[in-house]
Length: 194
Image (cartoon, rainbow, N blue to C red; front, side, top):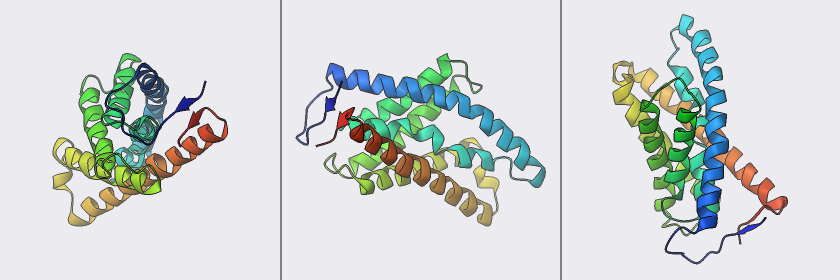
């Protein structure tokens, strides 16, 4: 089944858009759940050297992939937010370790992802848009963790270091890897982006 995404603006979500966002959320919800184990291992490895909290920033890019993928494929306002937030809902229902606070994180991540598409007025869908989405997600989620996880107590060096690590993770996963996934879907004729 091929989805056709037109360049002209559509006013509302259609059933096919909702189905696509739901599929992305389900797939990534389980990817997020599995990646929690990697987070735990990274935390355990980094804690003895005083950088256990860095695991959060290393993993953040993986945990934010559903938003930009949904936003890029559906091309409607709110799609990136819904993809990310619903992915966190699936992860919660599947039994992740964070509890209901995961929904707040999903909403924050979705908001950050959506901002990147907003800055292009939902008209450009290319590397630059994914770069913007990765950058806005980095900033929004970092500010959230700055308050929630006590990043404000870090030294200036560590504040910058954690931010840069998070941004690199976002660029790798929500920009490069998402674009590669989109290219593969187009090549396999699963989606069309023209």
